[in-house]
Image (cartoon, rainbow, N blue to C red):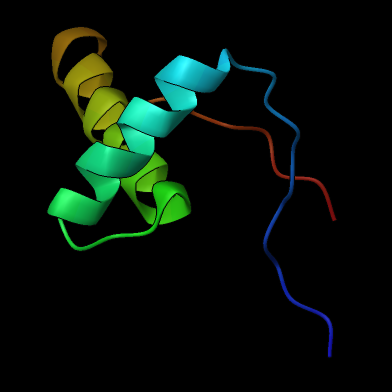
Length: 59
């Protein structure tokens, strides 16, 4: 089954990753979902300040 989810590798200090995992678990999320929420919040914040981000669509 093919999905539309992109994947990328993140290189990060072990201690920071472990602490991030603690925060994610506290919030009831996986590290992946916690990172996704942070990214969504940051993009929304950016767009409020600078306007919508227009992306070129490729098919």
